[in-house]
Length: 256
Length: 238
Image (cartoon, rainbow over all chains, first blue to last red; front, side):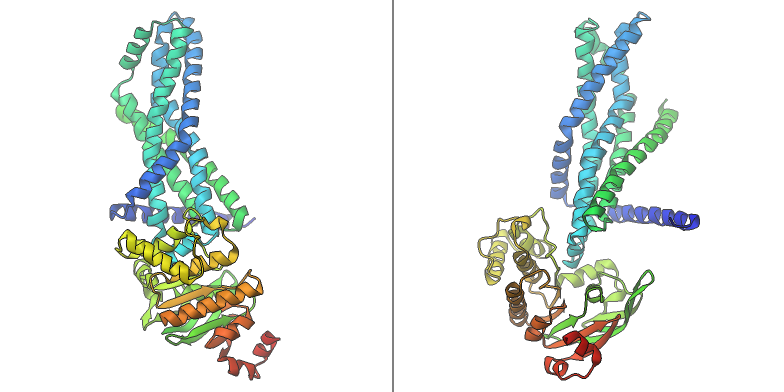
């Protein structure tokens, strides 16, 4: 254990390095140094890897929301509002946050482990030795893919979750199918949908940044890969949750 | 020519390079010998700008690479080859794609010419028929040869080899050393090799330096080493 001032300095140094790292990525992007084939490959890999688990979680969440909502709203004679409850909960809050957290654990962990292994096996250093910028070749495609995949997965999660709610609403709460659908469409406004979507673009950036940075700076062999990968996932979770609180407050104060 | 002038590097409290001075002549095979942890690899990485020194300069063809920004260094590195201890092959690419990587990055050759060039290099390194294998399927010696192929595919004018014989049985160490000599002579490239394998160093080196306690303790040709009264050389030879 170092002395407290040393630890504080180390934390600020770490933050500085992480910000510098993001600056390098953004410099590549703004100069148009983007390898689109690699970006598409990453979108496919990250998306395909997380799709099933995101869809299953969304389906279960939608169904549970509808079940709980139906029981609670029925007490006030308002069971027909189950569809609104499910749709608004999923689009404004649960869809974005659940998707981001699942994506952190699944694809984020993979990104950190992949880059970490490459780092300890000198593949990242080897990239520099061959005269190729590893940030452009390895990091930019992964980070951009995160920013694209998380919103895509969120939209899918919201649709699947609403479908889960529909199944329960129609079969258990005996709400007419047409009424359920029309209520869902009526209750979700553009603001509801896009406020969630704006959040997940930031979540994608946060996850990509955290996991790429942790993987890129991994050292210490296989033990290091385990340590930095775990750190990547844990930090992503924390940052997503904190960012969600901040962004929700900001969006509500702007859009209401 | 590669010149190293008063190069110093510390990691925390540990001084790894302490005012190192060296001059490596064009076209020669130069070995940096030393025990484990003597700073050989650190010195080699400085020669290609992969590490920044605390003080001192590294000159490649009279250009001070320590003063260059990373972007300019990338262009310098493209003209050199670097063989890492374990090959440092991309484990998500097969052998063909690994060797073709520098060509795809730094040339505009069409696919057919890239295929032809990669095949030529693989055949010259006795690696015919392994194009589609992944690095995980290769032995240690094969990985080093593929790494060597990737390092020379652009016709490097400077070749750096970091411990090319470590982890290999004696016969394979001899093979890879011979290959390095063949490649160096064929490309007429300046070759810098770090090693603690004295036997193979003596077989193929034009000159050798001994790095000890962060300083160059001895420098000379093989006969000069063999007749040296320098206690550091005698201790290392024994």
